[in-house]
Image 1 (cartoon, rainbow, N blue to C red):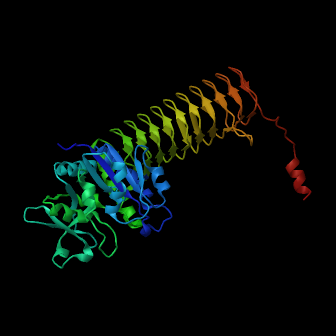
Image 2: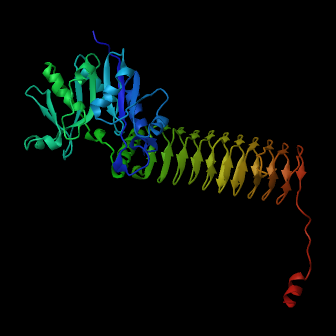
Image 3: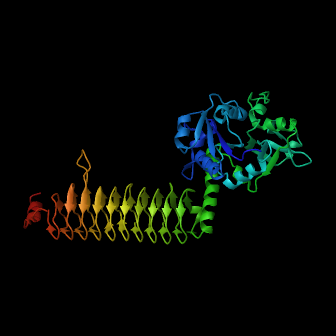
Length: 457
């Protein structure tokens, strides 16, 4: 009885010269996620117990973007797809069950499709994922026998005129029984124009042993969309964007203009969230119900509470409680934690700070390396002077404090509970609770100075 364990093998050793890039093709991003990471995620969600990746060109860059659990196997020379599987022989020694062979440049594969391919391969030696396309030029054609089994995969350049009329093509995704696989691979030669060893020849090997080769045809051919150029990368992004947006709308998210909204597939958005146009949401951002995001907002690795608004603003690697108001034109930099009901208003920048419930920074301020208590009010033009040219220092503002407009808070500094700083002050010493701090020069008026100076010019 065969084991049902499935190992995925992702082929990602090539350079991808048509990308015209210094980076390996598979590390280029689709909706802000490296395409090979999308492939590895699909394999994991399909139930693969182990994932191997064949790396070659600039292998360090490829391994750097893969999840830690993915194992990398180096292919010194790219001698074809069959050779890539042979290179993994040592890593697969002692394994049983099935081997799912995938391409690292196919970011649109769905886990459920991969599960179907694995299922049809049960108790068989080989199964092939195929697609029906309008223009099959350049693809290997699927030739079936009278029973519907795959009789051959014929490369475009080797196809007869009748075979060129076939619209069912090879996607390059296969499932093999591991038992006997490497003995069969030894029967493949490189007697072809490229001098390479191709997995497509496994059809002939299996058929020669009296084995049927099953073909699973995709319901949606777009899943087989491979990326070989910048244009195809953009097409993959558009297709994935449409899929992600439709999935979110089905679960109750309002996306006002889907074609103008860009959401990474690793983001989680609750029902009754409204996404307004020209908004980017990426890097695993989490948004709770009732929030309104946009227009013209960008969220990266953000955690947004319920019933918040983020209008024309940027939030990076930070989190906020419920009922927060952000923007317009605010910049929330990494390591910011906002409590419930916090307001970060127009042209406010906040960095590496904690701001507790009900506090407000309505406009034109910079708050960095600071801790604000509850119901603190920051007047317009306030700056925490957190850097002295050598080190960053902390500002602590206790509950209920009122910071007057245009106050310079020179860290390290503590402002006591319910204290007030006068507008236009430079505060460089701690302020006790319930105190008024004034830190500005006395005003001096010189009567007639302007008239006298004009007369002298």
